[in-house]
Image 1 (tube, rainbow, N blue to C red):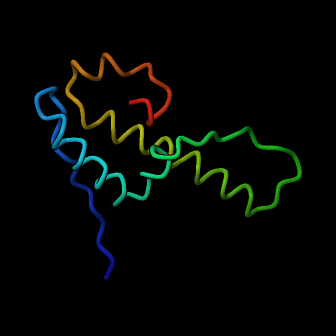
Image 2: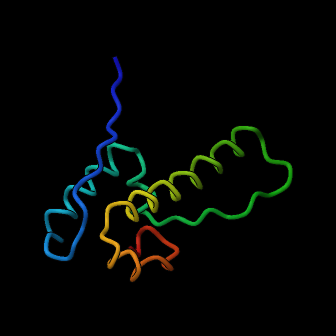
Image 3: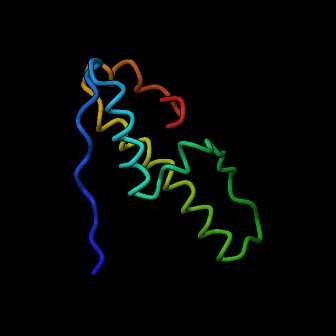
Amino acid sequence: MESSLTTAPSILDGDNCETWAVKMIVHLQALDVWEAVKENYEVPPLEANLTMTQMKLHKERKTRKAKAKACLFAAVSPSIFIKIMKIDSAAEI
């Protein structure tokens, strides 16, 4: 039976950086989006004449990047969010 982890790590408040980072990495790995942060790959625009497999891969990679960023945004305090909200890349956060 497959179970899903939905509990996010504690909120980063500035005093818990070291433990939060470890918990966040494991959380992102469990959600299968850590690769998007670690590799910080670019998702180029779709080209013409792609196969269904290529289009699916493109969508998956783009979605993973967005999910990683959403997880990071959700796991920081409002004061930290204001400082990072304009950062485009999950890896930069």
